[in-house]
Image: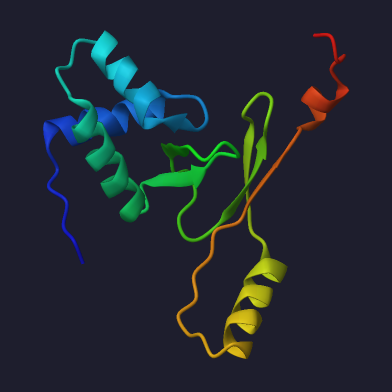
Length: 134
């Protein structure tokens, strides 16, 4: 297990991530920290986010465009997300059927200790109901 030192920079990244609404990129978080004149570099932001995600303090997912996004984790343990492509609303969900399918599929192919990531992107009810021209 890798132990991540708890530095003031890591604490500041954790705080900025908690203040962010929804998932944000490392670049966006870095811009916020730069605007706050923290002196924290982009590489430090990336390392801190990776460490927070590894320790379960941050959720990490890949956007449909392939960018890694992060947010402060609100639920302990393994979970999945429903994410609105328009407004970014995120709902954490338990997906028992997905968990069982993943384990069965892995076992059927001789795999053990299988892990998976499932994030579902769509439109939330509010965005879906909004006029297309808005």
